[in-house]
Length: 256
Image 1 (cartoon, rainbow, N blue to C red):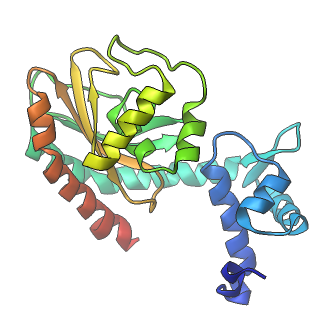
Image 2 (cartoon, helix red, strand yellow):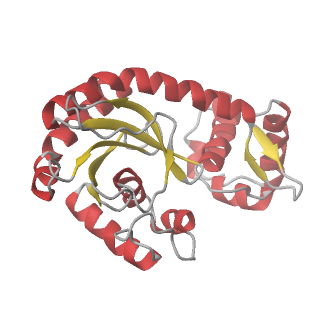
Image 3 (cartoon, rainbow, N blue to C red):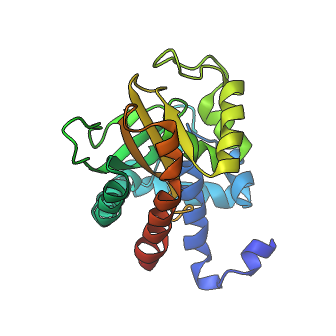
């Protein structure tokens, strides 16, 4: 028995094991086989298979024709409810970000290999950036995507980026995995990411991480026209955005 298993009270081992499997599947792009799942969660293959069967009967996982497993509709419904709750809780933080920067603020989360906007507070300016709640955007060409990728281990980030050429959203988009990897190293060193007209010409965005895994892979960002959101302004607002993100993490998300 592993140290991990020994540390768990016997009465909750099955629940912990099932949650380990769900968290593994939720964090991976695509499906996994029983052997892979058992290895990743440090369980015998037979135990992993029995748990997968139980989870499948309740709709928490699904099995594809190749007998591989992914997240099922029951888990997705819980995820939708969690996203709605997070969006409501995040609104004060988004308003604080708008007040601090003068630009539109967003909360975005990683979902199925893309970033999805969960909530937004608009800039007071007549000319402002608008991202529809629920909109999906790429990882490699957005500040929210890059800051989330930078917080992952190398293997997971590379799996999400893939091996081929990345789609150019504008002439400024990084289109090779090596170029994105170099950018991610800069993001790790400085603690924030910038979309410098990489997703849409005329728009600059700066993003910081939120939650440290409490709600998944999340980012707080502000976006504005390049005439107002200069590179200097983008870097100058980072400390305040980090304060807002930390407050959201510890005061609100941590209290649930």
